Length: 126
Image 1 (cartoon, helix red, strand yellow):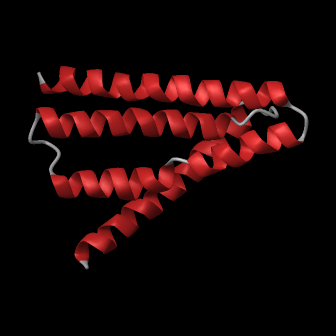
Image 2 (spheres, rainbow, N blue to C red):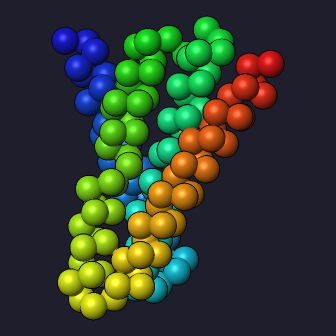
């Protein structure tokens, strides 16, 4: 029961953080593009890559911490379902170019962020 409570608390923090990043991004770039979702997805990938590699390379992240951070916080922080919706909305609205840019940017930057998190964790753990 304690684990479920902690995952829920981490999820609440992730959801609040996602909202904060989205509001910040909208204020920074008031455009039609989904910058908030992109930033959240890339940051989530970076943090997940970092956490999972630290778990492998060190004893700094144990299984419960990974569970709270990866499942709780990042599960609520990342917005992949929102990414899917926004991409389809771009297509529905006839903005096929923005849909393609959205998919490519989230995929490429997300994968690069996971790799960078992995590299950073190896540097920190060394």
